[in-house]
Image (cartoon, rainbow, N blue to C red):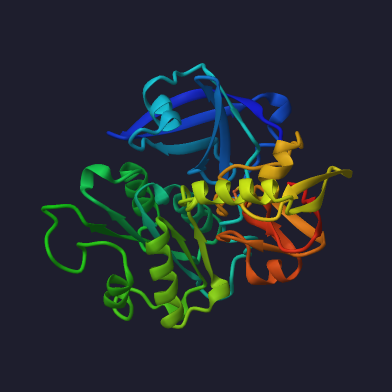
Length: 360
Ligand code: FES
């Protein structure tokens, strides 16, 4: 179920001092598997000092173009550092087929001109760029306004591509750059993207209530503030999509201690996990361990990527029993109401649970 396939690195473009854009080619027999929708991401895996790391990076290309992902080096990041410094053209890299549901879905060209809004901070631009390219290329009437926050001009990813997009769709694509680093001039276009900045932009530059959809990608705090501001300005919740990578996983040590205490006192629940039709039953602690962790501890090849409630790779459906999710950045309320859960965030609430992994 959790399958990885080799991709050949065909080009490496050094976009900013810290970011690279990798062009990747699947094998001929995997072409269909690596077809993608705008806003999706790839999960890569690689071993570093014997430990397997998995990292997800968004696709920046639009469907129909070659597969490209943007990777920004994070300080101390083993994978991003390796990709930036050691990876070479001709190397192969292992990836799962594209995943994620951040994009606009199937939108046919509208009768009325549609206006879309994107908010991106730093490397959050990657999936938003893919979405903007797809919308502008697919609907000749659509407009897209991007608000893009960075510390400084030098850290703006895809500067050249954004410029090209602007030239190609002169009257339909606009970018508002905000700079938050020292030296940025005071004013509307300085500072971080937050609720106050949204309030300043709404009305004059942006009319959220009239927007078809808004896409937000960046750190959690920014995402929440922008989503709240958009809703407050009249854009319904179901027309706001957000994506966040690298969320914190708070309290891991505390959770481990809770799991150990539950095991020591025999406070266990019976869990059954179904994957590809095969059911496996095992005991797991009532507290402190997620269903995903418990399943993997029992050698079940359950799918995962971020383990932070963000990517939705680990989606399952609860058939029996009750669970609670610690964090959920991926599922909509109606999906939760239908029994879908992120197994990396699920803690059992009942004595018995049965969860089936959804196919991807
Ligand atoms: Fe990413 Fe669970 S592994 S949401």
